[in-house]
Image (cartoon, rainbow, N blue to C red):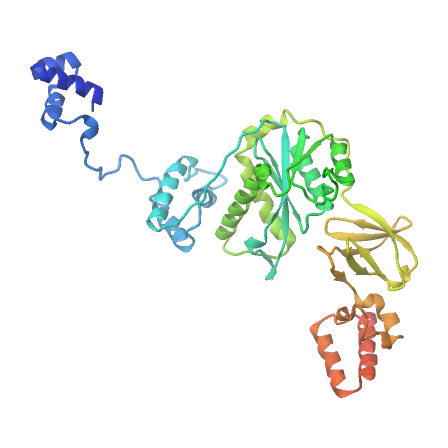
Length: 441
C-alpha cells in the first residue's frame, strides 16, 4: 500500500499525460498499483477495505475462553488482571512449562472489553500519579465491611491500616478495628520495618488519633509527635475534608478493596475459620500485588533512611483508681473488674485490640477492647458475689442488662417472675447466677 502523498504525486503525473510505465518508473511502484489507484480515482485512505475474516495468528485465549466467559456470566464485574492472575494460578505449575504468559494480557483486556461492551457493563476510571523515591509514605484507614467477610458464619466488621510508599506504590496493610493511635503506631511501625527504612515524610489526614483537631493550628497530638520523632519522620497532614490531597492512599484504597473483592469472588465464598485464616488469605494477596512494584521499590529502598535500633511501644497507658462500683472507664467506655481491685490504683495499658490491667509490675487481667463511645463490657462474674447479698439493688442496677449472659438466662428470669413475686424471683435468679459463676457457665 502506498501513502496519500505518493498517490497525489501519481495523480499529478497522470494529469500531465504521463504514461503508466513512466509513472511507475519515476515513483518506484508497480504498474499494477498505478492502474489500481487510477481506476479507483481515490487516495489510499479513501478506499474502504474489506474486513478481514481470518486470523493472522493462533488465538491465545481459545482454550481458556469458555471458562473465562462462564466466570463473566456469573459476575460481569471481574476484571482482566484478576482473570489473568487466576489463569496463571490454575495453569502454571510451580515446576514445568507455563501455559499462560503475561503477554496475553492486552489480548485478554480487548476480549473482555468487547464482551462487556456487548453486555452493557460499565467500567471504572483510574487516575495514576507520579512521585519522588523515598519522599513520602501515606497512610489512612480503609473500612472493609462492604466486602461482607464472615468468620465462622458471623459478620466480621473490620478495617485495615493501609500504608503506601507514593513513589513505588508498595503497600502494607494491618488489621484493626478502629482509627486509634495504637492502630496507627502498630501499623506504621510494621510498615517501616517491613520496608527496611524510613522515608522523609509521613502523610495522613486529620485523624483525631494523630492530630489535635481542637487546637487552632491543628498541631500533631503529643503521642503521635513522639512516634514520628522516634523515627526521624516529618509529619504532614492534609486539610480537613480534603481527601483528594491524600489521593495516593485514597486511590489505593479503591484499588485494594476492588482487587480483594475480585480475589474473594474467585475464592467462591467470603467465610473464614477465624482471624488468622483471614490474614493468611490477605497477606499473600498483598504480597502478590507488591511483586510488580519490586523494581521501583528497590529504587525507593536505596533512598530510605536507617531505622532506629528498637521499635517504640505500641500501647498507651494511664492510671485509674477502681471505685466502689468495680467499674473503670477507659476511652469513654465502661469495663467491670474484679471487686478485689476496689481501691487499688491500676495502670491500664491500652493496646490495639485489648486492655491490660497492671499493678506493681504484674499483669492482673486482660480483656477485649471496646471500640467507639458509650460501650459497656460488664461481666456478671465480677459483681455477682456482692449482688447476691444485696438483691434489692438488682432491678434498678445501672448495668442490669448485662446480668443475662445468654437468652436462656433472660427466659429463666422471666419465667420466675410469672410464677412468684419480684423479690422472690430476683433472689432465685441471683442464686442461679452465683451457681453459674462458681460451678462454671
